[in-house]
Image 1 (cartoon, helix red, strand yellow):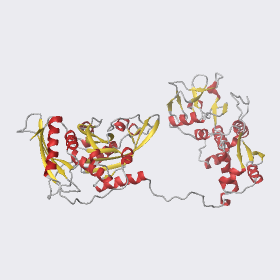
Image 2 (cartoon, one colour):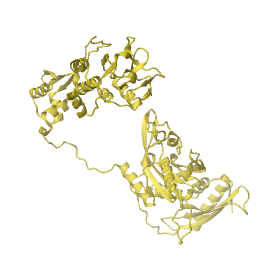
Image 3 (tube, one colour):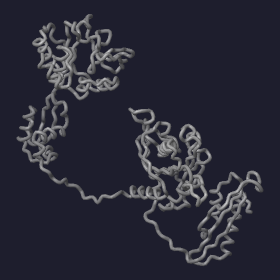
Image 4 (spheres, rainbow, N blue to C red):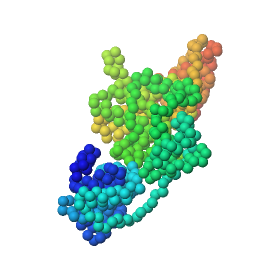
Length: 567
């Protein structure tokens, strides 16, 4: 009939035939999805509902053939599938102009399985969207009776067999307990118990009253109500949101601002920006391989259950991977002079719990300064980046004497140009060059040299002390001495400095390398290192005798402890 077609058109549903249109109309009217089958499909007398078997296929009404999953609910004729339950019917059981006998089906299917099946096969329908959200159990049998009535009245149908019930589970109305005082407290109202009961009467909710306590019987047609907060919504909706008084919430006074940790992180970002670096913000999600690259001791990964793609399936355990990706993006566009940093969080699953850590990382490429006729062009190297990091440590109040750099092998970093950073013997990060294996694998980065560092702020910030004390210029002159040493190549600068500092006495204020040489006129396996030592007594004039005595102790210790020859 035209009246039914018009109503379907107005609802955005195309008309098909008198049987299918009736099931769609009943679905719109009651919210209960229905399906009609050509009875010839079930010639063997079986109508079976089960989970699909692996390897089974079904051609849907939209002529799309799908490979059924063992978690898909299907309806079969006893052998082969004829419908994906709750989603869409099969083409073989379709109602056509030749159909004379019809089987109507009205059911409740598991919402989760229906939702996953519709998503799995990219086939979300009007029926599946309703099953996902829930349907009224009380309307299932009413809907099939209404459909049969319409077919009898408007399609000259005869109801032959009546209703066959596979299961007929009854669902008792949900009882939600609350109090009138709770409803008034949340809404900010002063409704009496009688007024609240009248509101529930308008919804046809039976209410048992015991003083302030209310037990509300919620009919199955309102499956969206299950907790006291749902009742608050209903009372507020019917009472009228415009009738609720506007009141200022009672909250403790707060002065705002950042925590000490946040203040320090912002301070460090400001220092790094002052060094000429630009801030980058990269994805927290990356591939499992990149997530643990550039990490000294990788922990268990935090992986996403339903990733968009394999390159965004795990949470990062370092910031360097995002900066390397940013460098690749820039290099592909001929931007090779880079100085980028990122301050952000890394993630891991360690000790049975998920952890977040604040890190700061930087990456450099190109020249230390833009090319200019006024100065010599110099490429970024390990020592330039180490100097940048040392400046940062000095600015935030970390004593350079406490910072130690030790050669370390870290995945993704150059094997001989990478060091671990230790403060008071505690590992706080790494510094070095990105491995050639990484840059060669990336077409944009091939042939380039990238240097950078990454530090763990969660470890460093607790080491910082409040405030910085300014020291006045010394009143007395300092004495400087140079020391040239012939050492074995395996001996590190750190080992030499440790010996010098432990034997120089209390007046040594500065120690720096001024020259390193290896080659002609030096024995094979040896290198020459020259140091400049600065001695200063802030309370009195320092004499040569004191300095000479300190230098003698230093020379003796170097010869005895490290077999070093003083040149």
